[in-house]
Amino acid sequence: MEAYRQRNAPLILIVDDNESNLSLVGTMLRESGGYGIGMAQNGKNALKAACSFRPDLILLDIMMPEMDGFEVCRRLKALPETAQIPVIFLTALKTEAEDIVRGFSAGGSDYVTKPFHKEELLARIQTHLSLKFEKEAYHNLVTYSQQGMAIVQDLRCVFANPALAELTGYSAENLKAMSREELKMLIHPEDRERVWKHLQNRIGGLAAPARFPARVLRKDGEIRWTEVYPVRIRFHGKDSVQITLTDNTREKDLEILLAQRSSCQNIIGSSRPMQRIYTLIEQLADSGITVLISGETGTGKELAADALRQAGPLREKPMIKINCAGLPETLFEAELFGCVKGAFTGADKDRAGFLQAAEGGILFLDEIGEMPLNLQAKLLRMIEYKEFTPLGSAHSRHADVRIVAATNADLGKKVGEGKFREDLWFRLKAARIHLPPLRARKEDIRLLTEHFIAEFLSQNPDRSAAADQEVHELFHRYAWPGNVRELKNAIEFACSICTGGILKCSDLPQELRTPGNGHALKMEHPAGTGNERLSEKEQILKALHQTRWHREKAARLLNMGRTTLYRKMNEYGIAK
Image 1 (cartoon, rainbow, N blue to C red):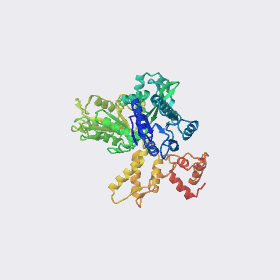
Image 2: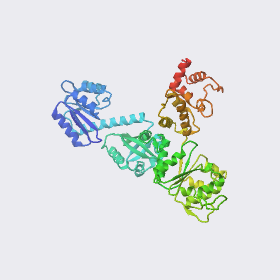
Image 3: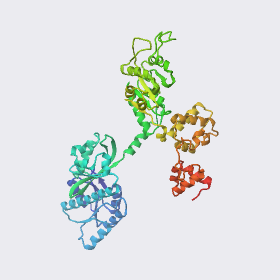
Image 4: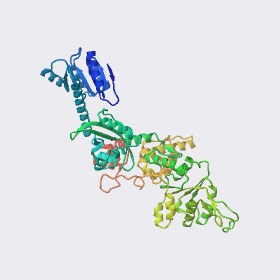
């Protein structure tokens, strides 16, 4: 048995015990072009070849020793992997009615009687291949109705389903109105020529159906990763190509995510929001522009500022940190800009401020929303002109300093209240890193938990600790108003008091263990009675009744893990 397949060409398996017949038919197909060819000289090898190479069509001789063509066809049709392959019988016998019936009963698609004309054989082959590919196309249309579908005639779109409109961002009417060049622009530049050439070959009948990857550019500029499957069909009486696009963007994103980092400098997290933060830090690190880091208390704004420094060219330069909420207003200007002798009572000598100390490096202004209004104008001037004037001096000084600010306040709201300068606000928010709260990236909680436990153990090598599954489940349910800082403090507390090396819920701070404290994620009580003081057993029973004893749904309703629910049902003797 031998076979060769031309790239993207339909593969035809020729089965005949006569070597000269194999050579004759093979030569005909080779000369016609556009076909791959496989050959087998008996029924046993034909079955093996069909299962191995999955031909698009089989030319099968009837009269063969050991196993005739009818038996070979029956066995092919009994196998799921070969049942859909069309079989054309080749026979030198006079085709009596009973033989024709026998052949069709075995699953054959057609008969060609030897000796045959080349044109007749090729026409029969093309007809059955077209029918096979049409069946596949309509099967795809039914099976994958949620996938993007287009029908193309002469490289113009004549049909587009709603899923394709959603995938591309263009309406079906817009897609049908597009020229060839406009349709071509929907393909990512790096894939464009390859995809377009493949479609042209498929439309011209030079390629068999084959799936291939291609990136699609949405109307809004977003890139979608797709798998394209073009199949020739007849549509409204014309030769057409049906194109199926499977959106694999989510899978591709997850694949990329798995290959990405679980941390950036000292920031821990592998979730998608954190991956975007890491990218933004790297993009801003090499520039000298002012950056505003925003986020709730405890989200790690200072760590983000440190990461900006470590990822850029200023990693060896000084970084001076100021808590704007911790400086008295009367001393703020002198501390920030410095002062000269005699500038105020007690100023008995010139003194450098934080700006001068940060020369060549970074000045980190934490809680910038608390900076006095009169100093905000001076800070804005320093950012724009790279110069400042020490308190009591008549001469300005140059400042080669990068400003990184942080706030947990809504500066836009403060602007509206007259507590923050609008021009400074606009200047700061041009480059902004917003850190998500921990409740918005819950997939990072286990990673952070393990990190903080390992950090505690490295400082206390005589202790051992590991969180049990119930702790992880409680951590996942809790809303973490204090964010990562609260998580770290809770773990340090639990590690300090736990015994036996296993962190249990009883080792955690009271506020984490107390339900209904305003910070835990509240359960929607299934009773609907307004009674929020039901016992735990009663809550479980009501959740099970409401979900018709679907335990996974009940666990979600109760905000607990499935294993925890099973354990508690055993404890309380709850059975259906």
